Image 1 (spheres, protein in one colour):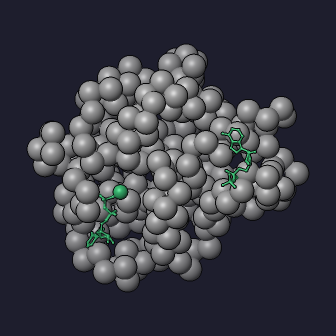
Image 2: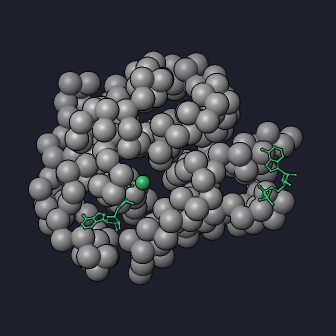
Length: 245
Ligand code: ADP
Ligand code: ADP
Ligand code: MG
């Protein structure tokens, strides 16, 4: 299960558990402090993002530092870019290694919206951002015999689990460095045990030693917090606004 998975893999740490990177107050600061690539910064400004929102100020440096994170901030507060920016920073450039980032969303609508943000912010860098349209065609597009010429996958969990449970699996997640669960409160809510099992299947398929997980939600949920504290490695908790907003 996911808990066994997290103890099985020991990640190398250069920072102590108590260390949390300082928030940034401008996007320029991301470039000066973390050497964000100019094209990514240009895309951020081109999207009309003049300065980071509070959740972006806090979550982006934490994720750039490869810390596991549980983040809560109100709807409309810019959570999508808060996880997409550090992921694009880590991916650096397109590689033909298969998916290196995986974002789970509770609905297809939301998954497609996140995909648009990924594409908007990676314009000119050439990342291949993908969505599982049909489980049946996904096997050909993304399966072991495909060219692995894609970088980032946004999907609802059902389709992905279907591909992973096939024998042999129809998708390889061994190069995934970031696993993001967006609207984690909703995913856990719709049958808590059901999604927790799916997440364990997905996490176990993400067999890289360098995997980091991030959970984002609008509302605070005790179930999610407990799961994060049990499962995530030195999790950083970030809350914007009232805890039960
Ligand atoms: P959430 O996931 O928290 O509900 P979204 O990521 O969907 O929020 O963002 C809500 C809106 O805010 C979107 O239209 C997005 O383009 C915009 N937005 C995100 N970050 C910024 C920013 N730094 N400055 C201005 N607008 C932003
Ligand atoms: P659609 O949106 O048309 O259902 P999918 O890609 O989600 O397309 O699924 C295509 C087919 O793959 C489904 O009709 C079903 O046979 C199978 N499938 C997908 N997800 C699951 C799942 N979670 N469990 C069992 N079968 C699945
Ligand atoms: Mg959102």
